[in-house]
Picture (cartoon, rainbow, N blue to C red):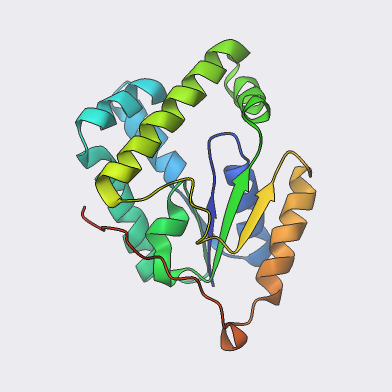
Length: 192
């Protein structure tokens, strides 16, 4: 089974994906970890690396190509990234979108990165706008389109364990043979 976990920064993607992979005995691949590693290799902050990615589209395209190839070649996988649901497309059995209000997400990021909240709010807004523009430009993806997701969870409403329980229940009750509703991912230009 291939499960994707997507959502904006601070929504709880990494926490849920790791817990889900552990509970199911699946591999966990994180696009965020790959992106952060690439930024570190270049000595850039995430904001600087996002700005660089605005001018060098190959950064995003390389990451997204790897995500798509991983989805195509893997089974028993939890694939986590902002675009995991879109990149995994027809290979995904269950696509999950996590979200929370901006102030909640920014507070989580500020705690995690030990940064001032006002700075994180500004960075998070700038990062989201930058990413949305690039996704639209590169692939024709509207990141606000939730129609491809099977399950959407507001992680501000439940703690991490409850969110895991919700998604785990959906994953464990999934039956590919009786699935009549896989939502196709259409209109994406996979031009890497």
